Length: 479
Image (cartoon, rainbow, N blue to C red; front, side):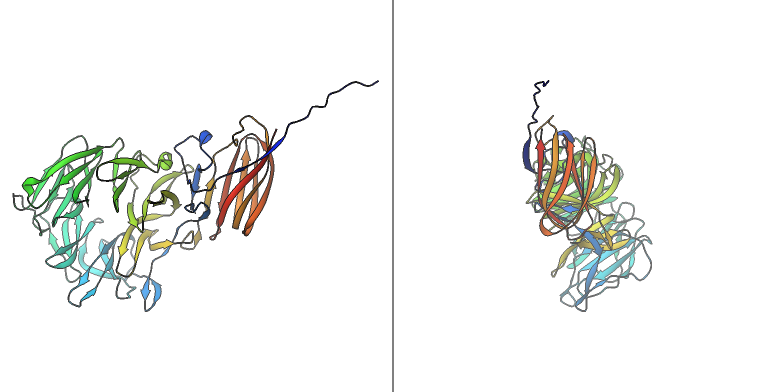
């Protein structure tokens, strides 16, 4: 006896999807469940500017020219490096450029290195002693290129590159300074509500009068005066919760202040960086760009990683169209020192985990570069993703995705992409994980997965310095 029995047929459809071109970078603004695949939910130490994943920036020890070769720098005694400065100087006695790199150390001394004389040995600068790392500004004083150092509790010292510095103690407690129409404009310590300015052409004269020095008091809701800069022929004062613009020309009776912006998050004054035709700074609630009138948010993708009480922000610098910011972010649950690299024209960015304590830009007639202090060493950027000799772990991780087929069961068959170098591919679904180690020579490779699930996530890890990953395509069946 036979019974009729209907055989159920399972409907199957094979699909393919391009995972990403990587250029979207990281985005923590959106929840993982709705984040588009063109963004990573976490990535670091990879450079994604070109749309492919490549090794990001690293640091090597600073190299300077020495008799036609590149050599490491040395100090005359064991010291811990704290802060560096660039002193732009012309030697009028010998009619030649005499630029210098200056470094403040834990023994309260300042050391100098001549950048135009092929020197590699730092020398101690007599008389430049400070109890804390000072602020500095290049200035032309009495027809000489000098560098002015200021400290909140120690006045100012004017160094001309030779002999002992000029010390001026009867000055405000300076916390930041800039030059505008031959006057020194400074923010001050204490109550932090006054913007002071020196006599014109004389940064040593702070006697208050209508034709010498003076100050502008701003005791309003925008809070403390943190950083002063010269931008677009105005003075801009970045404050705890706002920005003030000062119109200041030769006659101080015509000085005026305009309040431009009120921030919802506290501004970090150390991060205020002039980037050509804009200023970029970090506040508690994110990164901002200021054009002299309007302020707008940028790089929102890092918002959820920013530590709201970030007191470990180091500094920002601008070089060759890129904004660099050394600060702290919360990376995979841990506070990490990172370097943000932001191409302001292409609007692409990435972060590198590097132990940076300070950075400054040096720009001589022959070269320009960023100088870093990291783990007590003077360093410069490298195209190899290493810190000195230690490879950086490069990570790119996708959000979870259902490939637009929510609720459907899937069989993830394989991933195909171009690969040069070694990479670890981690694939996870709601029920299992797989780890696959891959090696490529620049062509397409096929990674067989054969994993069932409805949502999937992907993670790439590598320490191969010449890594390049591009055009990832995922092939899967839906049922």
